[in-house]
Image (cartoon, rainbow, N blue to C red):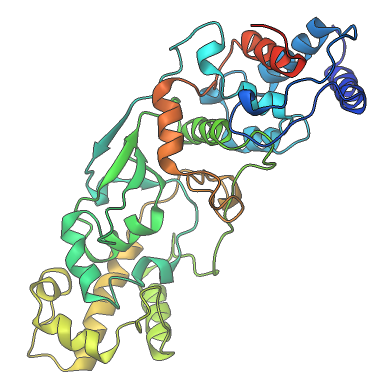
Length: 359
């Protein structure tokens, strides 16, 4: 068999020839059915070579995503070969891969204990963790409901792993590690965290437009990572934010005077922080800082890759509005995510679509 690099070079040259001849032209869409039909199928095309090259690419680079490390898988998906619309569309053709139903992924509702969950993201922002519960009393009250935002939002989990929604999870942990949090639990294939993340990335790529380029991603954040930091350092960071009068995502100041006075009278203030009405504002503020710092210092170490390789079910910073969590869930539940071999029938379907042949 030819060297893989030579095969891929020939494949790209072949595609370029087809496009220049007007045989195939892609338009945006979420499946192969949204590829523009061929305008001319009279030429003699070596379809089987095209199928073989596509199959070999997916066999070698994907194989079974649930046995892969997420980092090399994402690097492939961001490469010219991995961004080829045929490859992307084939990854969404799990029902037509010759073994329909073999890639159905279970999804359900859950309320896991916050303190028993492990992050996969290797950076947790302090400001995003404390911004709402330490500035907005409504958020503080909502912690006990499992939905700190109060907006019906859920984190994404897989067993005891946090897959997405880390800062909602760490916000809850910051005030109540014993509480539960509402989650969408996905039975992601894979026995290790990096494998489960690879399966998640395959599902996201199977859902976005085949011509949408790189895998969705989000940047690392503001440089205030607290994972691995001790309580004294975290307390110092919180104190500085409060002293600077920092405005949080809630639109309110961190540990502001109104917040402190309100928390002193709330049952949650006593339960989570140990403050009460007898304390002056400064004592109450310091008590809250000390308690939250101790909580956050106990966050477990992450089991995932750098931020750029983390799944973004809602498009992250690069694909906003192009994909939603529910869309990805629907793909997984239906078995359409073609995360493992065989790939030949899926590639063959893509070629038929492009060449306007009857199925």
